[in-house]
Image (cartoon, rainbow over the protein chains, first blue to last red):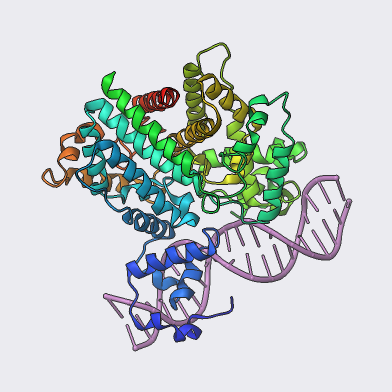
Length: 237
Length: 237
DNA sequence: ACCTGAACACCGTTCAAGT
DNA sequence: ACCTGAACACCGTTCAAGT
């Protein structure tokens, strides 16, 4: 806490000059290690061995910095391979996106919430998705709608699956969720009670672990099935 | 800024005592009016005519307060009507959820990001959704997967559609997005270029207005179609 | 029980000054 | 051009004290 920049000279990093990329990368690293709530421009500065205000020479604001972090995560989405069916193409896109978010679960709340971040996504992504949907036989209004649906699905599942659990006293929070599930009244909530073992820690709202600890693999695969089958149904209609 | 609690005595609100509900409601009101970024426990306190620390007698932390705000929004999701097909049931759920988020776009980033908030959703919601999916003929693993898919879809579309645009200098940001769209290279991005008029301000990543100003009605309807058709395909498989 | 009031340890960001 | 250093106007939260 009392560590002033000067004391951090031992850091090898200080040898090279500050860059926007280095700042954004270090920000992501800090979020990965300490969580989004503990991230601050000031702690980032001490990690970089500079004064907080030095960062503002490269980045206009904290928000833009976080937008840079999101686009860094997005950039790690490897492009889908060519020469495959549009269904396979789409499946790979979903899996790649999920893997990218999974690699940085602490940043999950940033994904899809800020429109700025979206903008940084790049036309390559848009073009690739549009091509895939064109190959599926969609045009005009339905093309736009299917595009929006895929983006909503990508963001919706991944952001939810990897949403972090509360930082303050997580253990007692987890116990509270579990205890709450044990009190389910079978007369008031018959469907819930009957399927409780299968839903516990495996269904949104009824979980006490994040997807990074308890992944929802099969649900995700079925979700992709649903999206693909749903899009296919648009072409015959 | 210099306004001290005592000066706010004129407020009629001060007449009645402080309650958790009153605090949460006022918090939502503040977010609606001033945006999420300008929300603070301290400004909320002056709005309520009390010292900041008074709030902590009713709410353990800022995060729990925001969780309360989310559950307040969720509570406004009117339950679907009985005696309808499961498809119609599901459609109404989607539309109700969207309407609830739309009523409080500034709070959209809170929806679905924090797991705590999810927990506050209530078993009524869960039971109702499970019943609907059971009526669709889903059981066991596919029931869980379909449940997760619907929740992901609900949150994914609404949170994205109503995600606020950047607060700092929004006009120049909007112009930048529009200018960027005009520079699309038709040789590198043929599908994007060919559909640009239809995509502009109507597709995620390519928008400069939030859904509260430029709603994505038709895309949303198609999205619900996709989800329903996709779920239906699970039953025949 | 419910709120005031002071205090602590932080924030993001500005601006001038150094090199 | 790039960073230091001081300063401003805030934060969330604690703790003791009042009533």
